[in-house]
Length: 229
View 1: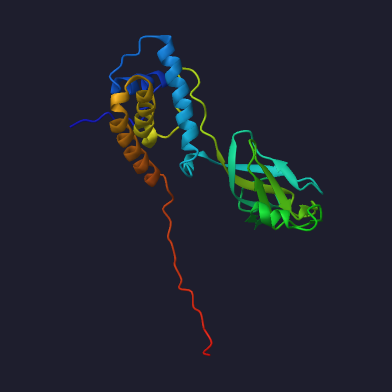
View 2 (view 1 turned 120 degrees about the vertical axis):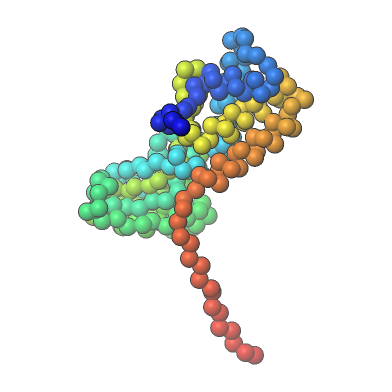
């Protein structure tokens, strides 16, 4: 039996909208329907930002350090910084020397006595505002480690034009369509809200479980030697 031999299936934004409306039992026949659905799709993408880590949106940023400057802006699409390290080179090749930085919270950063003190950075703090910033401690002295490299979570791109494709991998297509159908049902098919919500949550959960790193985990027991009284 012959097969297609291709693995390129995807959906344009208008196809996603049409499929979602069909699940609501509604035909898309007006420009208002399309505009309303695209707005709901962008809201769905925003809501996914609260659903945990999406591996396909993890991006490596290389930032040149300035001597004495502790705080740096992140890219406009940054949601949060996962991990960071300082490096001797802008390159990501194996011949660079890297040093991991420890992430600290706001309280720990606020307690540091002299945030402008220079030296070799060992910690970093992420200020999660509308556009997050990264603050290093100590402030770099730019002698050896001239770059900070960090992995950040990028926002899912907007839906944009109707002939675009969504900025999600193929394994999230079912969850995206189900989610949009659920969102639209709140406007056009209230009798289907509960059914579509259950389908959406089920498909999204499976997609999130699949979107994970497959690595070995080692668990060591904690040994405590108490003193008899």
